[in-house]
Length: 190
Length: 134
Image 1 (spheres, each protein chain N blue to C red):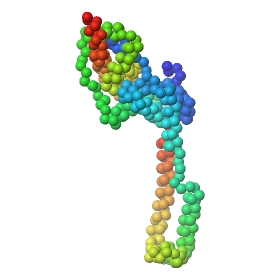
Image 2 (cartoon, rainbow over the protein chains, first blue to last red):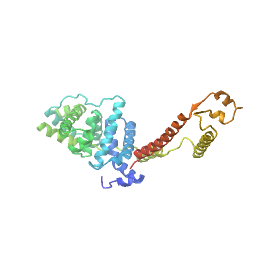
Image 3 (tube, each protein chain N blue to C red):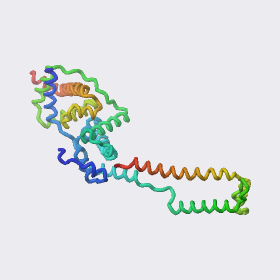
Image 4 (spheres, chains in turn brown, red):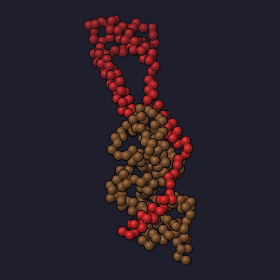
């Protein structure tokens, strides 16, 4: 995905073609994170665009201490948080019950019985129910394969907090899945 | 520990079915347009007055100051500029005939004006530098 790395020096001299390479490289992740945090497509598109405008304006300050992708995702995450705060929506975790060990196996089995296309739609619906922070954390961890250190940089958390946050977010997503898959789980028992 | 492993296994399976969303097809061009609009906004400096108006004002001011200083009593500490212009028929001078201010005040305003001009140009250069992209 990152074979076509944008030339930062060229962008700084005003090369818009090179900047469009940067946008094309990261737009899907930035948009996905924005969509999952804000839950509204139009708003996510606007915030993702604002993120890249901010990236362009601050690229001169990027010193390469972290990966370019990590730096861009941090800007995206902060821009989403600003938007959520501005619109008065909550950022914190939503109270969701703990999932028990045996229930995880039930959800796993029920998930096996679902078609791939249905599974994608179901996952999307469940992620939508998560808090903005959990959604960003899981999306960046699983889809962008960011490690704990990079996730900490993006979300301004230490590694331990990221680890705990990931565990809890996984539990919450599993619990939401369980609720959606209840008919299949009952059927499996029957 | 088992619960943690089971959860990891389940989530691996869940995210295998998940994929990134894509923004609208003209997303990149919309970003470039926004950037271009902001760049123009930031860098297009339009002076309040056109250059020729500015030069005319400066020349007029110089002429006025020169005229006043050449036509006033060098020993006197006060002068009436409107009277010295000999425009006694003007409606403007009728109202301002009594308007006097000391030459000391005139001399002190002049360096203040020069300092403001220097500061304005230095500030303008500083702002341009901090706003530059590089």
